[in-house]
Length: 553
Image (cartoon, rainbow, N blue to C red; front, side, top):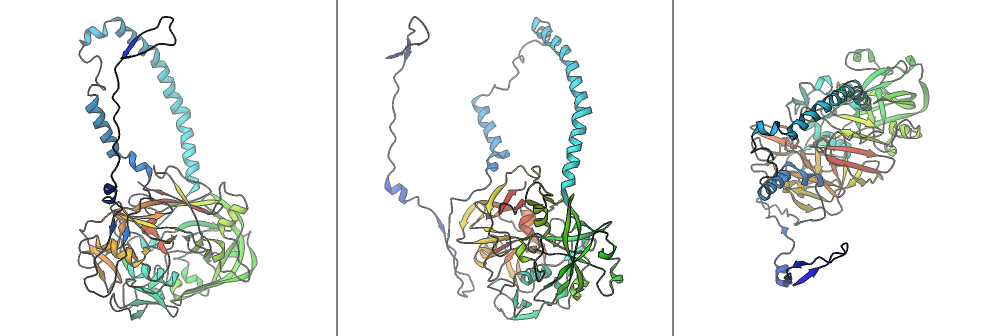
């Protein structure tokens, strides 16, 4: 038997100590490791035997969900259940088994009552301070924060109806110019946007009229451009109020992280008076602060739609931020597709400056001017797209930390093509992680769908019972009552979930829903549009060339 001797007492105190048995750890056998190697998932060949092969999807342990998930309600319930088993009486009232009368008539009870009487005036004083000082101060802070958040609106013409899947998919094909691949229903061929015949027949079905792509257009001969707007299904376009000029007009612009022009409907358009009821028209001659700049601009698309005009220097105010000397591109000519669009008064591009189309010299984008003129605190903007029962907003120079309980995770941006492009080298289905080597993605508020490679796309829809490719619509669909798996995509080193309520684009025929995730064709990068962005809060930091993403609850 051993003993312990106290170092702080004059006389030694002998404390008996029982011998401790040392347990030796057993080594792990080699054959155990051999039987627990990393798992791989291999897909069977497709039933129609058209020679399509699946990649093997190795389990990837290096990607993470947000650490905050481990603090979820389930974790705490388990923790408290365990605690209650170990210490069943920890929360028990110590006076539970006493006679109440006896307790409150002892000196201890009298002392408690006296303390309560003494503390009551202090509590009343604190309550008075909260009402008179703290609450008004918090209200001021709330109002100040609200000024920094530029709320999104649905255009009036989309209150009951919105552009169709046909329009959303064709618009992405127009913007990025991809070929069809195995599953893309639309593509660009010879600079023309076309609808393909079907999954097994990749010939052209028909050219897509520009009027069927542009938001707010009338229905084409082949497809309706609008569908009924239902709750939970994604919206094709949000608009934001922007004030231009002095005294100025407030126009509703499409904020777009995939382009870099600020252009607006102007009084220089031929026959502009017929559009006064459907659009807010900018007249630089009526603005006290406008000046003509050298330069012209032109935006054209493969479907034949185009916009062009000249450039003015004027004051622009957005999200409580005033930008002096901002270049405003005034539309002098708009193609029929744009003239038919009742959804917005123009566009404000938030991509990198190299995508600006003004010639002979590019002009500075609004964000670029905000940063260089020092009118915002930080060189960034943030985006929260609205979801069910909640509004969305943009903010400039300010990060709203109240959007979500999850933390922001940052990753570097490749801006060599002018887009907000990031690494996205993994995805998960029902929390099982699969690697995508050398894959990247563009975060684009100007695109509605999520567009990914064909192998990953097929893998996801194979997990949904009853899903199938619809040749008529040009994309994947699934039964309305199908169980949707939890699907996540990586931005940098972290995976972010697309919530089930945001997974579908909208209704298809005969009890089916069109998926919000579709094929990117032969494009070499993914496009994460609104279907992804509605699930996260995003910080676009132009000063540090990073993107920060936080999962929303």
